[in-house]
Length: 260
Ligand SMILES: Cc1cc2nc3c(=O)[nH]c(=O)nc-3n(C[C@H](O)[C@H](O)[C@H](O)COP(=O)(O)OP(=O)(O)OC[C@H]3O[C@@H](n4cnc5c(N)ncnc54)[C@H](O)[C@@H]3O)c2cc1C
View (tube, rainbow, N blue to C red):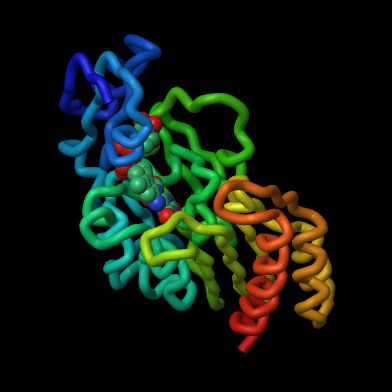
């Protein structure tokens, strides 16, 4: 990665002005993906002094600052209470502890990585992204948003609810990217089904959800509906067929788990 200038922002407005100054300027979070990609930047804008590294327990939601590290997220007692700990568990599946001490929740979401365990782990729930300048959109809307968001992610709002979640990452070795990842939830009696790393970015299966939420009880059938609806592809890590087989098994198991 080549960088001309490192800039430590003093406020969100300051960071935003700097970001607008050139298309070659970028926000710096943990810097891990930026470093791996090896791109050139004019100015990288560090948000580390803006107090965005807090997790707050509000009445109806948990608010996670964009600079919260993956490690702080997974270890947070507040987060561990959410949905039987499934979102925290999803983040715990990324690389090793030293890595997660640096990688942030904000950087994980803004990249919309097709392999993301963090995004798959959050997508079954009502999750809203708060940006600067003031704008809010759901995580799902952000994943479907065309083009680059020229804004700063401030916080991730995770709605609280009564229910249980499930997350499964299938990987070849402990530190690998996922071959596929699956998240399922049952919150206030409503099922949600998400499959990611297909190898495309996570998406909900609305056909499976419609079947289940209209009284469908056959979890194997719901899993079939999910793999019919969502597209899967080959890449160097796995064939399309293997991904489909894995998704069918783990969607079914996830539904069994959250229904207990
Ligand atoms: C070797 C390697 C292996 C990985 N394996 C996995 C894996 O198995 N599973 C998984 O889920 N993830 C994996 N990741 C991704 C990782 O979990 C993080 O999501 C990634 O490193 C980005 O987080 P970061 O804090 O390093 O962000 P950065 O690299 O600092 O930033 C990433 C992007 O987001 C932008 N950005 C960051 N914060 C903001 C903000 N607040 N507002 C606006 N834009 C922002 C940056 O400008 C940049 O474009 C891997 C990454 C690496 C490098």
